[in-house]
Length: 494
Image (tube, rainbow, N blue to C red):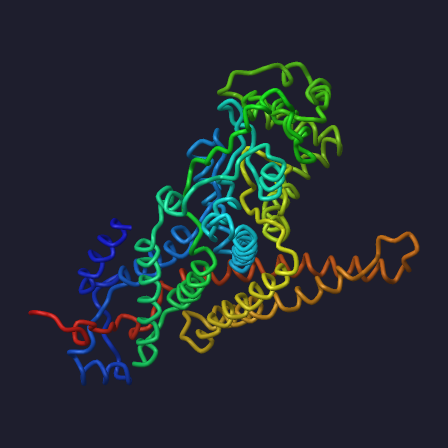
């Protein structure tokens, strides 16, 4: 944050530099020029470097610094943590309302947990810490698994563990973000919003890149409201130890954990740490036994990733055939990998698939509050798209780019409403019944196809709204280089 502040100040001192690609633009005789000449002490000039830095630093603050990821697994390496955070940033750029939905579900879950355990002295900070995977079950000093709220409550009620005794100040001490750092990000985005409003009031040109940044700045306030009590960037869990009298007993594990352990140990992704289970299962024969020996044989660690890729390709070719298997890997699998996290943002409420950490987009089951989370996401998408409509009559380099902007802004504003209505209709269709009429099955398939097409169209519109402002920098109006001289409005010494 200190580095960002220093860079921002250095960029501010350089506002009198010349703009790309040549010297300062020669202003034409219009209203902006008349204002500029009439009140030279109020207005100054800025360069394209200042515009780019101001927008990109604000977007970075909105999409990277404002994100509060969950606690990583004990064996996660730094690039695993970095990759997950980078993925959250990417989804926040393309589908911001889905990240808002995930944050709202965590918020309502934390509020419900904090209210239920208020008698134990728990606050929303404790609840968020539990939701993000901050408590882990240990036996004899050995990590067993990450705890969710249901298992922690069951173990505590049965007397197998003591309820975690950690103060809110201790959790805040572990957090990399505090009131000051979060306030700095809020002030930075608020300052950018104030600048855009001031430019509009004074009839100065606001670039398309600034409009996009303004939309993300508006989202930051919502994200920080939902995650204000969530600790930031915690890397280690708080151990919850099994009591001594239960050392030799096996602890009932949630459904699906045995399968997860056997699969992960077989794949070599987890260290063979003991995880006691009541209903142990015998690991199935290795799926690599049917593969060629050159692929199934153990390889050094340096070739482990390549070996997994070969095994995956062989599995798909054996399942679909050589041609269809390769086509599936190239054409379909990338979409599955991309849309799977979006599905997690919608309904990931279980830890059964991975108990070394909570899923990236996990939130507990919040019951009826789920509807309120969806409503917040829809309202955010409408406001987010509506902000882009501010540039409806802006000057674009070409007439085609202006109409692309208009169409995509309308799509981003309106499409989430229609898809939400269709999703509700689809959820009420009982097309899986063997006695369902054919027209109902057909309508269900048609609605599903429309939802998939709408999602693809929406993503294309979002990408267009990210690309157009950047390419429009090649030909900015002359008024875009006029800036407000803020030193006139604030007391200072010469």
